[in-house]
Image 1: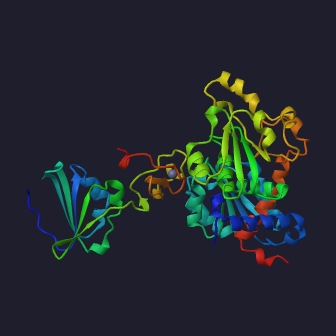
Image 2: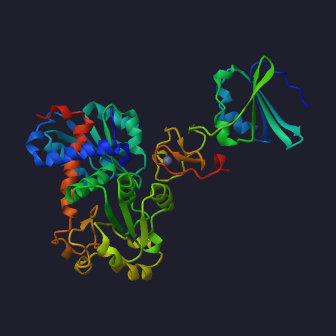
Image 3: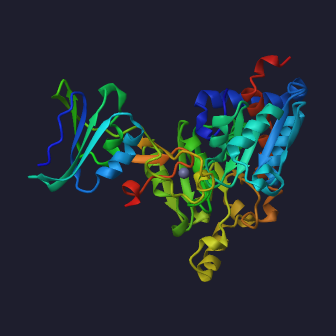
Length: 308
Length: 146
Ligand SMILES: [Zn+2]
């Protein structure tokens, strides 16, 4: 039985296969509409994350399955002090697969160790969020037609941004990838990303502070939020924040085929005026997330062969 | 020196820094073994001034000394068979360390679930880096956190 804990659990080939399946689901939804008839997904959300939970639930329902679960720790057995190991043993009796969101890092791995059903890590603290990364990859591959030979700009909080670290880790496995890392000095990527991931894999990268200066070179711009509390002082935040807001003026400097992605929710880092730009892909990204999760559920349940 | 009888088969752990033998007794879980163990504290040493020594009489295949590679690789591990030293074992870093060190990441699941074993995995042999199996946080402390 297989679980998904980290985006790197899948080899490049396995991931290609998953993304092919997700693309096929998009084209032939009817083929997959009953593949999970009678199956149940348990969404075990120890902290609220409406977006991720809805995406998983929509994915399972699209496949003909149904959903049980809880959406915060207060309404769950965790509130009564039950361990993750005990909870998953119980849930294994009710459901066929589960997606677990937990504020503590490694909780889904603990669950996987005791589970008799596949466990999907739906986000564990600041650690991993593999279905976000798979969603990002599927969006890029669907809209760009490839995951190789891309110049990718990552902008915003690159120090604490878990999605950014996962995406870098996942993309360095493809040919011809280069990064432009756009952030304030104090929010640059951590050393281990620079040394153990980028340098080690001989991936070209540049670190810059100005989005405007580099936006014209990019195939893809991945925006993240710069949070006020990450700055040492208020003045610094006010001085910096506008440089990391994407608006129509900056979009005018970008190439015609540059894509804009964002893991959502956005606050103000992308101006609303950008939403209607055909290059803005962040809402389509949500739809791709559902297809990617559908493909993942099918693969982890071993149901690929039952497609008619 | 205080005389402790020779052993036929087992291990003699020599050059343990004085005062550390009880920690090692615990880390090797010698308490759980049904065998003769002698702990010699503050033995005279030309090299170290004072040192501790542990002698364990047990079938040599029964015990792994790997953890010593993590705790202190300057300890000498003499393997004894038929009353003779047959090997001075070289210590290497163990691939996995269970319940010797604790993860200190406050966001780690081990911080709220006390029953979980604390497991660290060797992720970089060259740089001697261990990471928590659950949260992947790097272990930065000294043995037992000093
Ligand atoms: Zn940990």
